[in-house]
Length: 550
Image (cartoon, rainbow, N blue to C red; front, top):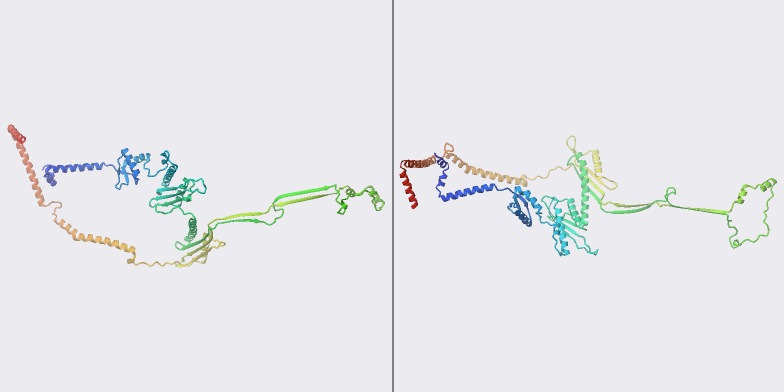
C-alpha cells in the first residue's frame, strides 16, 4: 500500500476534501496559510508595558506627540488610562521624556515667569506670581509619601500704605491621600509651617488643611482649640496614672485581676504674683551700710561768752580806775615759799591753757532689707487626684478564691500611692478595695437564634443541595449512559465495528485496484511506444490537433 493510500485509510475525511471543488480547496488553503502567518506574527509581537498611567489629557497628548517624534511604538490600555510601550524601551523612554519635562502633571511653577508679556499690568503680574507660588507649593507638598495630590489656594491681599487697612494673608490646602494612608499631627503641622514660611507675613495659624473627605486636619483656633487641648491633657494625665498603676499591680495579682480608674482635677488658670517684703531693723553690725558721714569741729583761744544775757552784755567795758589786787589768805612759811617760788604744774597748766570748744557729728545710713518675689504659676497644674482600685480575690493553697491579707492590701495601697504621686496636702484620695470579680458568663443565645450559626447553616445547606443535585444527575443520567457505552464496545478494546472495517477495506481495495489499473495502462503504453513509436507519435499528434481545435 502506498503512502497516499495509507493517509486516506488513516484520515478518511481527506477523501471528502478531495471531492470538493478546486476554488473551495484553494480558499481553504489560503485561509489556513493566513492563520499560520497571523500566529507567527502574533508570536513575534513585543511585550508592552505601562509607560505612564492616569495622565491628564494635555500631558497625554504631549507624550504621544513626543513618542511619534522618537519613533517609539505605543498603544493604549483597554480603558484608555495608560500608555503602553515595548518592555525593552520603558526606562529609556521615560528618561528621554523626563529630559523634555514630561509629564508635567498639570502643575505649573515659576516657569510661568519665563514667558512674561510686554505691557502686562501690575495685577496680571501679581496673579502670575501667585499661580507660580501655588504650583511650587503643590510640588513640595506632593513629595510627602502619604499625599497623592494637593491643591493650594493663597489669598494675598494688596499692600496698603495705611497700617489700619493692612490685612494678613491666608492659605488653604486640599490634600488627596492614598487609600489607607493618614497624616499625623506632626505632618499636618509641617505642611502648615511649609506654606506659612513660603509666603511673606503669613502666620501658621492662618493656614487650613483639609483632606479629600472634608475633614479639617489643622486644629481649630480660639476657645474651641483651648478646650480641646485641655480635655486631651486631662485624659492623658488620667490614662498615664492608670497605666502606671496597672503596670505595678499586674505582675503581683495577675492579669485581668485588677481594675483602676483615675479622676484628675487640673487647674488651668494662669496666676502671676508679685510680693515685696521688708525685714525688721537689724543690728548695726549685721546691716549693710549704705552711706556714712562724719563732721568734726573745734575752737581754741576764744573766751566763752559771760555775763547776764541782755543789753548790758553787749556794751563795752568801762575804763579801769585802779589796779586789780587779789587778796590771798595767809599761809605758813614753808608752804608760802614753795608756792611763791615753785608753783605747781597743775596751776601752771591751768594758767597756760587757752579757752575753746570742740564738736564731733557722725551720720550712718543703712540699706533697707527688702525682698521682691515675682511668681508665675504654670498652667495645667494637678490640683487634686482621685484614684479607685479594685483587686480580685486570689487563690489560696487549697485552690479557692480568698481575700487578701491586710498586710498585702496595705502593701498594694502603698504601691498605688507611689505610682499616682499621692499628696495629702493636695487633698488626693485613694481607695483600694479587695473584692471578687463577677465570673458569670453572659446569657448564651440559642444555636437556632445565633446569626453566626444561621449563616454557617445556610452556607452548608447550599453546598449539600449542590451535592444532592450532582448525585441525582449521576444516578439517573450519567451512570446509565456510561454503562450503556461500555456495554456496546466489543471485547477487543479500541477495535472499530466490523461494518466500518469492511467498508474501509473495500474502499482501500478500490483505490488500490484503480492505482494498479493506471500503472498497467502506463506500462502498456510504454511497451507500445517501444515497439511502434510512429503509431504512438500519430496518436499524440491527433490528440494535440483535437485539443487545438477545441
